[in-house]
Image (cartoon, rainbow, N blue to C red; front, side, top):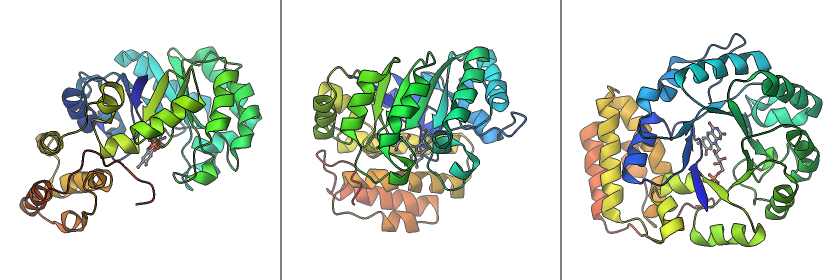
Length: 318
Ligand SMILES: Cc1cc2nc3c(=O)[nH]c(=O)nc-3n(C[C@H](O)[C@H](O)[C@H](O)COP(=O)(O)O)c2cc1C
């Protein structure tokens, strides 16, 4: 199986990706959290920092764009081409209530003629290969038959299918049967995404979808940064590795010049996932830490507590 790291805004930033690629090699590709250009193709300085090649050394990165119109997409794609990128990813999956009503992200799936027109423009003019990360529908994964007919009209470099509808947000059970039908019917290469947090979950996907070659991991890998290795070579994460990863990440954020408060916010965001590797423990005290020194002491106490378990994994119901 080939693995990629899902884009996760607020988590898989360039600093995270670099440290992760160094300590846990073997991820084929990382996808950037989305760049959201305005009508004239401009976007936030933070988005630019996140994708600058000098900030992504050692990382095979595919930048992602969230927009509903061809011009801003193409403007950003041209910039990415000038930076040396070879592929760009279109976000057709973001379920956010501020995004979908603007017909962006999963909102693209609500108007198929408009999606078709957007792809037509993109594929006739984009200087880069284009992959799409999509949900299977807005209200139901049953919508995906009609959506796939649109994707099948274009030479996508990869169709990454998050096997949920928008209504399922990050909670509903992935539609493996629907995904398997899509895998068979897609004219483009397909990557599976959705709730692969453990070997058992991967085995279930592989059993349902024989012939599948690519899987994208998100929250499971944010909880267990060695999940890629564990799923391909079997070697589980060790507490010491997680401690080292945590330490390097913290140092890298500080070296980036991030202020104490912002740095703590970044690390706390990550603990939402990593705490799952410490069953029975709580991130409450870490989250309460207001200074770097207090935070470090809490993190050390957690690592020293013996609560870490290599068998643990991210759980949606936790
Ligand atoms: C906090 C958070 C931020 C995310 N940001 C993005 C994003 O910027 N672009 C995107 O395509 N998906 C984004 N996603 C969705 C993930 O890439 C992935 O599709 C989803 O988490 C399902 O995979 P998983 O079950 O392996 O986590 C985000 C998910 C989470 C939880």
